[in-house]
Image (tube, rainbow, N blue to C red):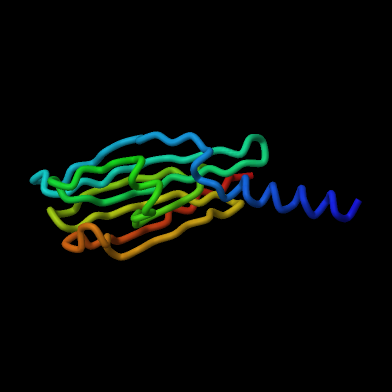
Length: 135
């Protein structure tokens, strides 16, 4: 019984963290004011009822277009948040990107970087918008 449980636990851990077996899609692409840079919001999910889901933003230069398959492999994103969060992306200048995201009463899992390793000209700022239910 203990061996069976250990095997099931190991298999479920592998299934939860395997990004190759999920569903992915680009939700939106946001060009900078002069089209020199692009912020791409994309989503990944999988694992069934007890699965995982996240939204990520990657930043690329205009000559280095976003490639979803490549991005899944290299994980060069600058921002990641749970799918329950509402994400807003705004370019405040050609090289300044502002990302805001919502957080409900149950919290949110988030990852943030100040710049992209693929487009270091772009600086990123973040803001969390707390959305608590009213009684």
